[in-house]
Image 1 (cartoon, rainbow, N blue to C red):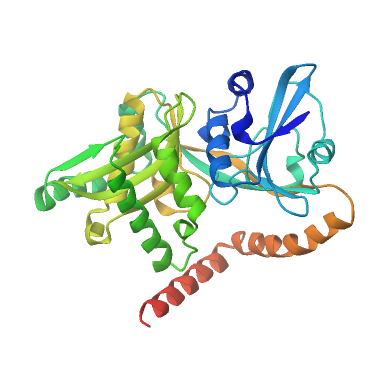
Image 2 (cartoon, one colour; image 1 turned 90 degrees about the horizontal axis):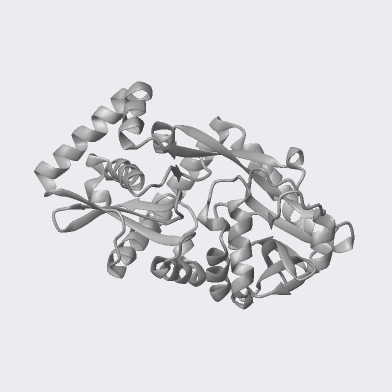
Length: 357
């Protein structure tokens, strides 16, 4: 095994990584591609990739970030929506050995990809990640929506027509390259975070820089895709995500609150599904997390996992004491919808109170 910075991976290693992902049998999620790891490595100095070797042949890749005391975390933790190890099918190793060889005492993740046989999934917390299947084309997806959510679809399409009549011709761009529109999306999203009492991700320089760089990225397995709904000349809703040839991983959606009565975010997602299907993409991964719009749009679900792998020892015990109690408390609240709803309302009230100061 050798451990390198993501930018130090050679062409042969990049190609081997892509080949292993293609053979994994998992959806081609762009967060699991080498390009995402390299982009994170440009903004996170402690990002590393362990290259598992058989002789001189790379047979596995483990992207991670290493803390000062050996605490490891999934690369891009906090924004990455799919995480894990890329291994040749049938390759045998253990989490303990992998952590030891990387000099880690722990490895923390919150969106571990399903099917990661290296980790004992039965010991982890599992979560649904809703998806939209457009593999049979957008018409088939819309027909499914008419069956499962007829009122939702009818209302959303009516609002789209109303938007066009009252605010200017509705126009959709699947892959907008103008960085000014990306800045607008980030401003909307930051305002939404503050409005709802959430932590503003774009207040972290490494996240905002990463998103801007990914917007410029073009590769077969991982391309930044900014989708925008316009009313006349003005953007009213936008989404930035990552796409591969077959998966669009939804990431940062937001809209202008002045147009909220038209439900522009829902219109945007329908047009994204249509454009994705036309581009040959078979699945939109809406990402982990409960939301009414996801329930209305989804056709199915994947499963992702949260937890950690830990090597026995004193430092591992310190890690457990520092992280596990709060993680368990969050899991307890999430598992009780009523309690979680009260928590969200408390955050919203706090955000409103701050806004009035």
